[in-house]
Image (cartoon, rainbow, N blue to C red; front, top):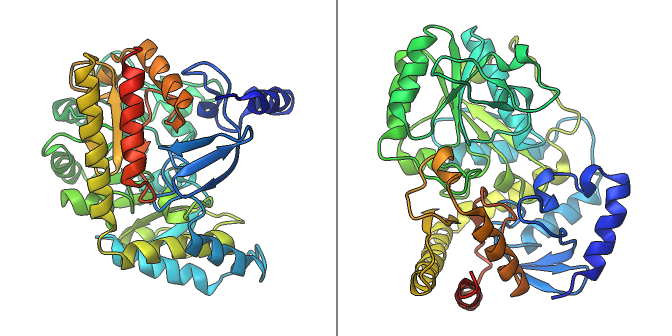
Amino acid sequence: MLYQRSSQLFAEAEKVIPGGVNSPVRAFKGVGGTPIFVKSAKGAYLYDEDGNRLIDYINSWGPMILGHAFQPVVDAVIEKAKKGTSFGMPTELETQIAALAISMVPNIDKIRFVNSGTEACMSAIRLARGFTKRDKIIKFAGCYHGHSDSFLIQAGSGLSTFGIPNSPGVTEGTAKDTLLANFNDIENVRAVFEANKNEIAALIIEPVAGNMGCVPPKENFLSDLRKLCNENNTLLIFDEVMTGFRLAKGGVQELSNVVADIVCFGKVIGGGLPVGAFAARNEIMNYLAPIGPVYQAGTLSGNPLAMAAGLAMLETLNNDAAIFQRLEEKTAYLEKGIRKVLTENKIVFTINRVGSMISVHFDENPVTDFQTAKNGDNETFKKFFHGLLREGIYIAPSAYETWFITDALTYEDLDFTIKAIHKVSKEL
């Protein structure tokens, strides 16, 4: 495939946009080469500026669970746009989508809409600190909760070591209240609690991690976290920006039968438009302004176009009883095919999958946390990525990102993908 037009557009973009992109992972820094510029998309396919068609396995990093340009969503946005694009005032739509989301997700009474997953997680942390009157939080190495200052820290040396900034612009004063724990290591988490007794407001986690590849929680890990949080009067926050309304109607809370105190949403809940949300029981949500002391606001929060898209998406998911089973079956079919061809071609690999999230790691050992995810052979991944791109298949341009499967994929698409992986794996 030729990407001459994409290369030209990237050169132009670099002159006016830092790095030529508005989100770093798009820049292909992890795999080399020039980013692909998309012209349009429909169903399971991307169409780039050079006229190439690509089978899409990132689906805008998760939101397009029903495929690109899903007609009910498109129609809802068009009809709403005709009546105005932003009011800065309440609309009935906000109540409708709030009521629907609450009916689909366990253990939440109220929800507030924001503009991104980053904003949702940032707001959830502020709410947790205000509710508990504590300052410290626990996050897990390898879990990404957006680019808010509180989350951009790296692990120190020792269980009780305070985090240090992982990005210039994040002050040590901000980072010191964020404590690092190891994903899937309950004893490590217990030690962090013991070293910071009565100081931890919240523990935030991706209950199925997606930013070190797909990494599922070990058996009982989430329930053990729930117990630790109960014992320490700490709020448990599930960052379900990726998993919410994707792995099940009720997300990981439904799958694991573990309830969180606050749940963050994004991606699917917006139907492809910029939407985030956070939700909890009344006792916690009533701490938010204007009825409580914790301030959170946003001019475009509850934007009518975004609410229309999100409502159309959630209504479809809520009314289609078979959607999550179809996604499970399609992703399992893909996993089985990938395992077969990589094994036949003697490639060292491991695959992680939960529902319609899946990732291939080029390492023979289990990938259970950020450290084991980093052990993968990135040079092999780069060849794998570019080989698939050459065959007309687009996966995340990073070894540390999950793939997202869409219901728009046909079994013919999956077979084509498996054959392409077979061809590419012969060259690795």
